[in-house]
Amino acid sequence: MRIIPIAATAALSLLIAQAIAEGASPTDPQIAAIVVTANQVDIDAGKLAKSKSTNKEVQDFANLMITDHTGVNSSATELVQKLKVTPEDNPTAQSLKKGGDENVAKLKGLSGKDFDKAYVDHEVTYHQSVIDALDKTLIPSAKNAELKALMVKVRPAFVAHLEHAKQLQAKLGA
Image (cartoon, helix red, strand yellow):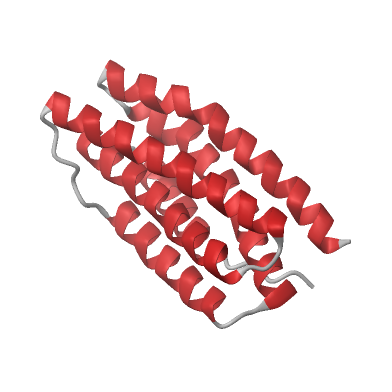
């Protein structure tokens, strides 16, 4: 049986589905907060995996997550400063943060292969949920062309991360 800590992804999906059902679209400042929070959640999990895993492939993947998601956050921060937009905290960003904190807390209690498997399983689920959110809500809801372009530009990296995580998941499950 796989252990998949899905609190963050379930909450993200639920909040986005609720917003769509209510006809509400996140504003650009809310989208900026969601993007930064989603990336930070993955950076935090990656830092833990980098320090805790003894599996070279898991450590390499964690390093990639830290590097790539830090880069996206840097780009997002530069863009919001350029546009003079202040990221607006919102229930989706708060839920992502809470789910990310819960995931890290759960991972801290694991070690060895159990840790590696739980970390990678979460990465698969998390990246799929973020891609779904980008495609179904965040990109279509963005009003600012530069914000939308940034999300479109980084989307292939999220897809590559998902595929990498799935390959790693298959290796760890074997």
